[in-house]
Image (cartoon, rainbow over all chains, first blue to last red; front, top):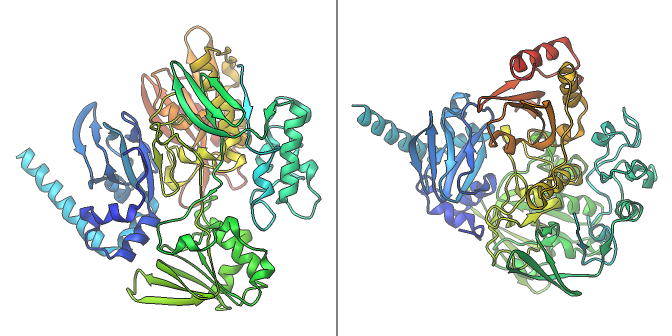
Length: 141
Length: 463
């Protein structure tokens, strides 16, 4: 966890949303995303602030905090930030690293181009979003 | 603070005796600018001078340049740094190499070629200049950018450059009149700084090979993975694969150069627990450039690029260059003094009547805000006893994540459309609100509209 991974491509290959990509496609993606490290308790996304990005958790854990309440926990392979980017709105929750956190980040402005260039990743993200929605509906019900 | 400075180099400016390979820097200094040389406002146009307290040591870079370019040559930059060190009387022990690090009670011990140094706080400003190679089979057999031969030795050769960032394009530019064929390759498309609107991407000075490529003049810029490099006698076979086509493309060339970037020689710090981040494995840092994992270990200079701040709208800081990290350095000194030595001089008070004009001036002319957009901010704090306190220039991220005091941070930001505009972050009762002001075509925010917007944002807070 302390050292940056030698091969981001290998790590990407092990994440569900990139499972359908070939090695050259994974390398292209690895060169497109930027790796970030967040110390425990560091804020990753801030509620109400513009200009954020799309984050994929490589290692560690984060919590979504809305209205002072923990509403979700995010771990390896999960992603966040896409809703505010796609809707062009500021995040509605803080994301805070609850353990040392290593993420890949794509600036919000590049997300549309990224999804269009990687339709199989886009499909995997859609499936994950559908699952989240279904869980949310179930929990409300 | 009592301090010692050691350097493995024999004199100041060691890096510029080696790089960039083709002689000139990528950071400019404009001798003629809208503001007087040596003024704070002038710093925005002079990316290469360091920042002393002494007036006669300011804006040294422009006094060293011969007028043939606004990019200093390597010798000019080296003279700039040497003159700064000499005139400010900075005591440096040169020829002293840091070799190992250990903890001894509440002190750090730095082992060096001249013996041991003990300190409360080490700051490692060792640059990002150690050649780095990705894990590609065969790449260990080809020279790195740092080992490039004189350009004329590539006359009539087919040259394959691994990497499509500035160092790769710098070499390609230097080889244009010599090489028979130049191929630049990496998995992702080339970014140009004029498109990213930042120092990320190939700088305009090195775009000529790209134009040659798009006009099909002989330079090839490939978006392809490099799977392996094989030597075959006097030539190389470079096996590449394009991400979209899935087909292998094998190139036969005479020379291969790994323009794959640099890392930082942090020696045993990783073993001591300093986390690293990114392809180049730079130390992960807090907003105050402290190791994210080992408290009390700080970093200086270009390593600051691994403390990225908010990267709002994807915009990077300029901390990888002198024009950015020189401001970080001032803040770092203040933070180390405050946290570790309890030296915290009282900050000046700003009369309430001057708040608006002061902020308008800062967002129009403050070099820290212009050169470190959405990274550094001017911070004013409401103090119940003293009034409005100017807390100076601070990292924006630290302001947003710090205490509950009512305050405002003023910064400049840039949106994807390329608009540059002031932003105020106000904090009332612990709740932070972002106020985006409008851009101005001349970047002059001394307007009635901006004044009104600041008043509206600060009403009941500082006004």
